[in-house]
Length: 79
Image (cartoon, rainbow, N blue to C red):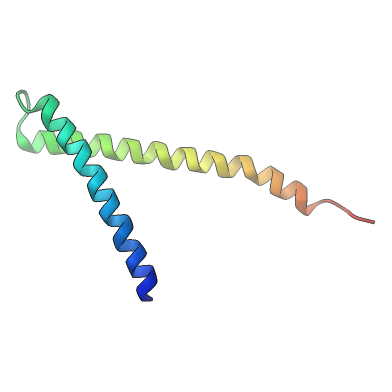
C-alpha cells in the first residue's frame, strides 16, 4: 500500500472515530442513569451502525439512479 493511500485511510478512520465519539457522548448523556456502561456502548454502536447503513443505502440509491443515464449515453448512435 502506498503512503498516500495509507494516509487517506488513517484520516478517514480518525473522522469515523470522532463521529462515533459523538454518538457515545450523546448516548451517555441521555441514558447513563438507566443503562450499564456496556449497554451504553451497545446502544451507541447500534445507532452509529444504523446511521452508517443509511448513508450507504443513500449512496447506492444515487448510483442506481445514475446507471440508466450512463447506459443511455453509451447507446447513443451518431451518424
